[in-house]
Image (cartoon, rainbow, N blue to C red):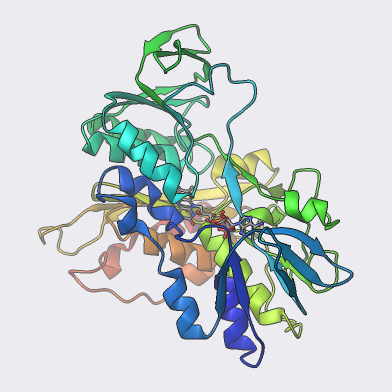
Length: 436
Ligand SMILES: Cc1cc2nc3c(=O)[nH]c(=O)nc-3n(C[C@H](O)[C@H](O)[C@H](O)COP(=O)(O)OP(=O)(O)OC[C@H]3O[C@@H](n4cnc5c(N)ncnc54)[C@H](O)[C@@H]3O)c2cc1C
């Protein structure tokens, strides 16, 4: 949708057609909230058709089954064939249900696809099921657990790694987030994966890797997504060894006039340059805008330079976010880093209503002072503050640029200019280095 909208805005004389398999599309990031805060899937529908119509883009509900890159045609399941000048593949991703997981086919084992019909059925079935185990404590698993608690389910969140959200946060922050989740009633088990789902026809229990058996009524698997690249592969568009469509910085595939964006397209980490499987709506939309702007003319400065992996979420009125690499990730990748952590408050004076603690951890490359990561636990401002850190990373700002930066403040809206956690964290780094 974003590729089409940006494409049409950039090339208004061209005709744009969006082909989508599903008539009604979910806001993907809103899906966990269907199971707690929102009443139903209808409240989470994306107004795709409205936006397309306003922009003068034609929309077809159909499935592209074949792309002929020589003849430049896309063939639909309905039999219709569309001729194209330029083609953008944005086939997305689907949830993983691993083949090794015994019992995965039982009734009341769920994955989380971006599919309204599936989610309607899942919501209806979960309503009568009390004890739910969520497998995988990434952002989606954490959000689901917190939402299910709101609906009165007993929730156990199981994570194989030693900490929840440990790919996104360093351990001292993960532990704080886990504490918040536990205080809201979620039982968290870490360092233990699922081995088998037990029961006759329906789920009755799960067996964990340590042999523990836990009685449960439903299992939700949130252990990752795989790119949908069958169509590309079958159309001889190069798909890499990890299953992503190979693209360059303009989001071009190796086939002339064919672009790929979003979860199905290959990604590199902005900092480490390593290939990563990060799947985010924010990354997808940035890639889509870049493809749209470069469709008919390569605008040499509008390129995608790697995913900064900016995630944020909230549990109650605590927001947390992360951008770039964690300290642990930097170490694993061989980057010598220096960090600074500062905890302040997000209002001044702190007696104002709704004042919340604001913790910022900044990660910089040791030899240059370039900001390569940041983690935030705060009030609901955490999302935008994480975005600011993302911009600092993308623009290769240094500790010095933060030390000299001007930030706007207001008692009801921000931390005090005298104790602004982002700048205080930079000061802590400066005090450990020669960058001051
Ligand atoms: C529960 C959940 C919560 C999330 N929360 C966040 C969040 O808070 N922030 C964030 O940044 N990201 C979040 N994400 C990730 C985000 O949703 C994805 O990165 C994003 O949806 C990727 O967009 P996409 O367009 O590449 O793929 P998709 O959203 O997967 O869309 C691909 C579309 O293509 C259609 N399609 C596939 N094949 C064909 C075909 N052959 N013909 C026609 N149509 C086809 C599919 O039906 C689908 O509608 C979340 C994901 C989930 C599942």
